[in-house]
Amino acid sequence: MNDEKSIGKIAEKDDWDTEDMPRKKRTFILKRTFSEKETEILRRGNIPREMEDKWFFYMQGDMLYAHRSWTGFCIYTVKFSDGGKHLVTVNRDRRQYSCRSLKKDREALDKLLDLWTREPYDYYGEWLNETIDSINDTKLDKKRLNNSSL
Image 1 (cartoon, rainbow, N blue to C red):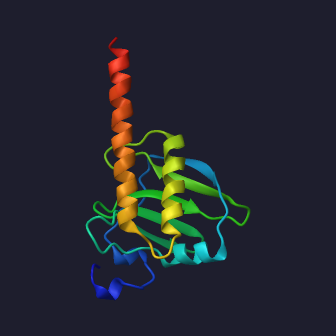
Image 2 (cartoon, one colour; image 1 turned 30 degrees about the horizontal axis):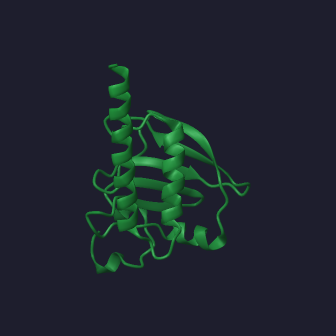
Image 3 (cartoon, rainbow, N blue to C red; image 1 turned 180 degrees about the vertical axis):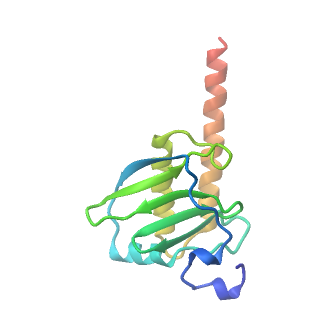
């Protein structure tokens, strides 16, 4: 669904071609509180409208589902709790998602949630942040490789 009707619509699972969370997954606790306004914004979800809009996300009950827009792969689910300790499940299928660090996943999801709870949602700013993070990760990997060959 990539048209004018999707603007302002509350996102639902059937609004996008998605894959369920694979069997290979890990969990961690995300400690964070959300205001009523932030929760309301997350409940609306996001139906991608542009190529740079990398995420389709929606809520069912107290569970947030976050899918990559291009592939439909479910990368994160977040089961919200009243106590500010939310159970996150993250994809670990290497064919769908390459990250292997729970620390990096926690940091990335926290950044995404910061962006997703802003109004209006700035998917281009998110795309820019992810691009910068990828460049920095590549530089670190290159530096480690150079240091290990000394």
